[in-house]
Image 1: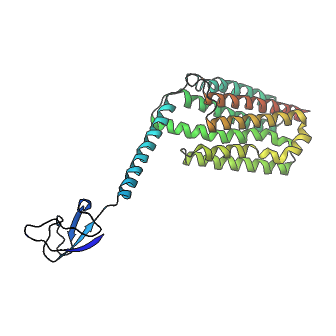
Image 2: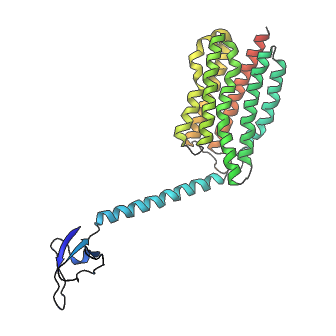
Image 3: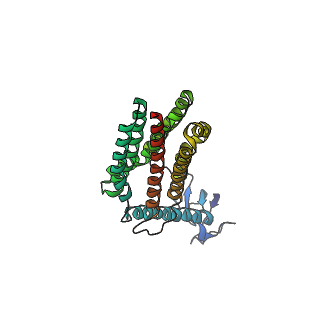
Length: 293
C-alpha cells in the first residue's frame, strides 16, 4: 500500500509514482470522503491510497483454487468407483451368513455348560451380524441415508466379531485373567463401535490399525492359552488372527485387486475373514468339547 499526493495538470498527464508502474494500479480511494478516484486522476491535494495486488498472491490464490477443484474431482471419482461394485461383491458373506448361524447353533446345543452355551451364543451372534449385515450392505441398492446407516453397522460389526471370537477362548484362562481379557476386548469393541458410528468417514489408516490392535490382545495370554488349550487350539487361534490381519492389510491398501469387475481387493478381504472365522470356529469347538470332558 502506498500513500501519494496527486496534483494533476490540465489536461492531466499520466502520473508516475516511484516504484509503482501505472499498469499495476488497481484502484485508489481518497482518505477524505471515501470516494473512489480513478488513478492517475484526482483532486488537487487529495491524499490517495493506491493498492497493488502482488503477482505471487495472485498465483497462490489460483493454485489453491486449482488444488481444491482437483481434490473435489478425486473424491467424486472415488465415490463413483465405489458405486461400481464387482459382480461378486457381498456374495461371499451372503453365503456365509446362514452357514455361520447354523454352525453356531450346533455349537450352542453341544456346549456342556451354561457358561459354554453363553460364550458360544455370543460368538455365533457376532459372526452372524458381521456376515449378514455385510451381505445386505454390499449387495443392496439403497438410498444414501440407508446406505450410510448400513455402512456404520458393517464397520462396527468388525469390532464385535473380534470381541465375540475372544469370548469362548476365555474358558481357557483362570477366572481373573478371563475377566480381565474380556473387559479389555469388550470395552475396546464398544469404543470402536462408537468411533465408527460417530465418524464413519474416518480415514482407513486411522481405524484399520485399531482393528488389528484389538485383535491381537491375545498375545498377552499366549502362555495360559497354550497350557490349557494345547498346541492345536493355540495354532488355530493364531492362524485366525493372522488371516484377519492379512485381510485388514488388503482392505487398508486396496491391494491386490486382481479382477476389479468381478473379484477385487474387497472380495479377497471378505474371503480372508471367512477363513479366519472358520479357524476360530474349529478352535472354539475343541475348547467346548474339552470342557465337557
